[in-house]
Length: 112
Length: 113
Image 1 (tube, rainbow over the protein chains, first blue to last red):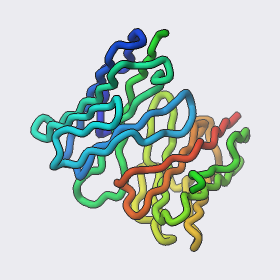
Image 2 (image 1 turned 30 degrees about the horizontal axis):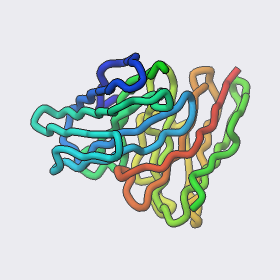
Image 3 (image 1 turned 120 degrees about the vertical axis):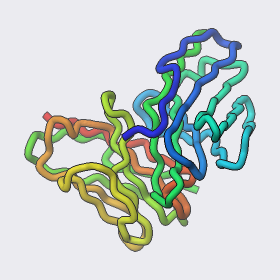
Image 4 (image 1 turned 180 degrees about the horizontal axis):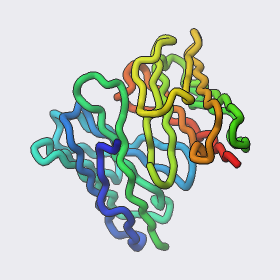
């Protein structure tokens, strides 16, 4: 069953704009991760934020985590056409389950 | 460092057949996880192996099985294929924990006719 639920399911923006995707989850976590997938290919890890962290940056990416609300957001600034992809959040549930539970993803389209 | 490799990349089978997919993790990684991705169900966890032992299993029927070898390479097997098994099968490796950052292979696209 899905742990994370991304919102929105699809997002279409113009190049240069910022894109924000949200993720909500249900249980206590060790960490939350964001991945990108280009059309039908393997996933690429973007960023990992631990449960005791509130914000993390990597290049044009900014991730926030609110454990009290069980939610996270991914902000991509100054988007480019190459950012067009599906973005997934994944949670590492507390309790040593040794697996990631993925949401259904947000499909981002950046128009040139 | 070479990335995660999966073979074959594409596969077409008919109902009732069986299939074996292979995954070679990044050198030094001991945890290998398998996921099934379909448009309807999204990414579903199949199982995770560590040091040749299945450490965790998802909610899939017994037709889905796997194993890991001493060199950390892993295989998954699906017997008595059904149309609904058509999917992208993704393998991912990590250094130790299945919940840590995962490095994914390109996937095997299985089509069951």
